[in-house]
Image (cartoon, helix red, strand yellow):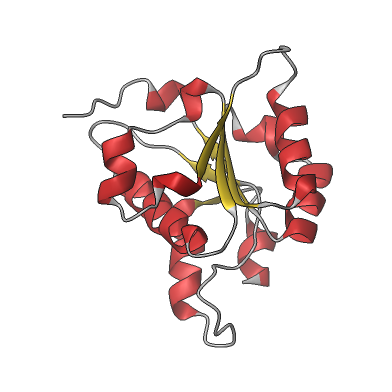
Length: 156
């Protein structure tokens, strides 16, 4: 797992999910806490979305919230339900005060009452030591949905 972190600037949802399958040392149902995790997908390439939903399902098993920051990060309710995610444990944080998404993610991670925090944007904007440290300390997964690619996705 450490080698995976050291060889890439960031990781993807599939990297994390596959690492959870190969990890025999961690008996808990929660995936390893590696951040930030990029989730890029399109209408034609939805493998990352499938891995992301599997990780969210695992995170949903904890007695903590799954927080989406901003309406643009929120996935379709039917998609979450079909993935086995209890939507009663899903929160949407609307940015009423126009604070930066980076700051909102940091605050959500520092509070420690979320098992996953999801925001849209470019991975480079969230791949910072302060986000990584906050996520590791709170044992929270931090997902960055690639906004440019997400706009191409359609739900049927």
